[in-house]
Image (cartoon, rainbow, N blue to C red):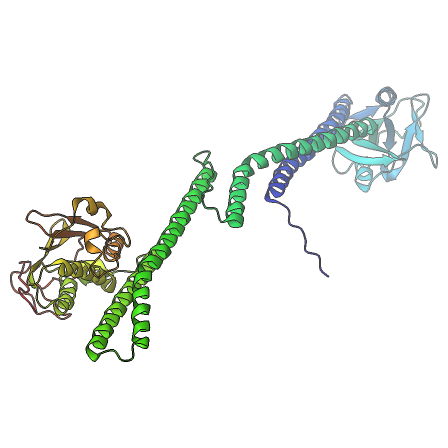
Length: 507
């Protein structure tokens, strides 16, 4: 069975990343420091040898017997090795008396290169530095091109070209570099450990708000408690994330409250018609010998109750959809035609009423079906509360905003009920005997608000109720014809934008 690999926490990864970054920086600094110090130490050795080479008679000048003794003494005082390389590769070494003699086989000499042999023959550069290993020790070798000029009693050939070689041991330099390597390794290790500790502290400080956010999210997921909040703790990204999380929890909490309220109110509103329906249907089933007139009356009552239930369920579904959906893509819509369509439907439902209508032609950006439903709700309310033979006034005007006003001349709304007319399922005491669900105006406010407008209910002078809807205007793509209710209105006259009385009186 494959064992799932345990994933490291974000805090661990962040701490490791900080430690790795600091470790790489420390390591690069240590390596650069090491090579810089090594270069300086080797440079000092080379500078010392070069300074001695300048004390000789010159790279191409005579190398006298006294100079040979001086080279031997210099090598003895510094611990260097010295030898003389003759043309053909012969190596001469110092004698105890201060002269040079051919080196014996296996003697204390160091290897020579072809470039150094060429220098001994008078060719190539006058000065050369190389690194050699004599035995187990490293050496820095300086080779100087000279012209041997021997004194009396010397075994060197007179006026012979040669190359003087001085090898300085690098043991001290290597020991110093070994100590430096150890120090740099310890410093690097300490720096990485310190970086890890600092990185852990920084990671914990950075992750702490995220940890609180995670704990709150897990608490909400486990308990379904949407009342939890997180302190913002600043204006940085994490603070804004906490604020966004709190706002999300608040939105979820309000959505849940709305759903609970909707279910509760819907259950309460549905209980009465369902109970009445069941009572009437049970009575119809049991009373088989009921007079025909009573049966027809009872069936008509059942039919009315079914229609009321259908309307109530439709309003509940529409309200639930309004909570869930946002405003979909809108289109440029003839507002006067949309209001006219809604008026035609209300005219058919209330043929006894008079409609005093004035519609200014023009367009608005809206969802046609959704906004027509809202207008229809307003007109239905006005028709329901108008007395038989009464008048409903409908005005659509355009200024800085579109203004749709619908006024009835019914009993009006009490002042105490005005603040609550847009609440779901709210019905004033005087309206509870009338058909309706109490959702119509709630749907109107939701739709108008989604379209960027406002709606208000007023008590006008002279009685009745006035509903006023304000909507933002748009720049029409084409000239708008005068008022008309059809989808294909007639061509515009020469003087458009004149309010027209679309209709007055029953349909």
